[in-house]
Length: 574
Image 1: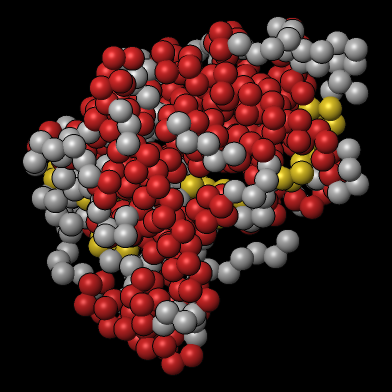
Image 2: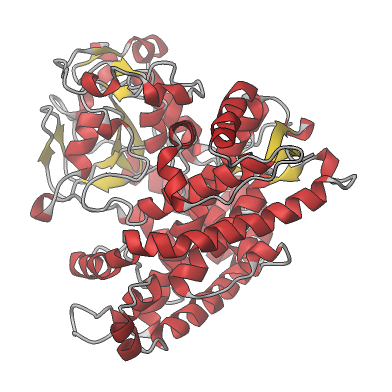
């Protein structure tokens, strides 16, 4: 499987005169914004980091669909804190104690999301670029949406949603079993697509009362449009000039495809917003309806006190829909891939399910999965957590920006304008946080001393920046040779000993953590239990080696396989 090349500016613009023009424009812009305005002695100038281009900083390093792997490598190479540049000075943070300091701030101390990174999502979710709760800089609007929609993710609503999830995975499982018996199916089935179909209906049916019919395994426009749009967002977020280039050259294939998909997405958001606005609020109140649809319908603009208009509802619905199914689906598909390539882990999970009467066998059908089963299957939980750790789909972020000079608790002075990258992928795969960090090892979550280790907070120790010095990295830190801000604790199987909980930020942390994490865990574990109890799985030969699978990874808002996750399925009942 050939490695994909980074999306360099000239190629991204479509080549030719326009591509040459925008490349030159990049260099001019880089000359203005990339050259240091001041030295950061005593501050971020001490930090090690990758070599920076004199004009473009680390733009070319990150202008690739595999930017998450670049950030992971920087985290392993440079330690707790690393300095790089993407238009602004940036710091990659992999020490969980510092992550807590950045993401856990509240009120006036909270640091905003950088518009440079998040704003490209606005035109995807709204034809007028109205921000969603995910990107808005308006703290009052964000608070109104979060407070108003939290009841949608209550335990009671999880109980109501569970049968919908179970039925969706059953229907898709029936389709997979039929396909696996066909000649084409014997070459492998795409479990990434199957997971997306289950997750989409598992979210939209109970939350929005909208039936996409994805579980029926026919054509589903949203599954065709969204991946391409989100891929474009990811490229624009790390390449601020890409949108400008496409505006100059709308005839290029990328620009034309983006415009077509955008029109379809906007029509979908408008339809969903109209359905939300049509909710009978009086009847919903009498019934005690706290579904996401009802919660959205009750939202009021904090500036006017009026119910949100359909224009305002559109981006909120879009943000919830994408966050509600894309992340879970890709987490499940990665979990299935790891089970297929780790036969011992798969066998252990199947044995746990069989012991609970949930696994099929010849002549012995499985009993129906119940919601209560999910809390009584410890190895299922360990497998799910380990898949979330090793393949974190929200891989690049969260990202914050210093809107003022800030001094972190570890003493680092951060100048105004600096972006702070608390990359989930870099944190979860760092050998400074997790022992055997690159190994799929579910048992790490059952280590008897793991919780006790959280109480043994270690004093910060310096982390060598020898790799940076040896390479002659072009930062002020290179001359010093060492980074004075080391990790706050020691690696353990379950995370950094200084803060085990903050070592596992798969749903972010702080006031802006994921509202739907309980739903994601319920849907993910239901899908895993249902599919593993029904099928034994092996990796299809077309996937190639693990190294080839990693080459095929792409960041499309969520980290996923660019070629699908193809597995060979064998029904356990046969």
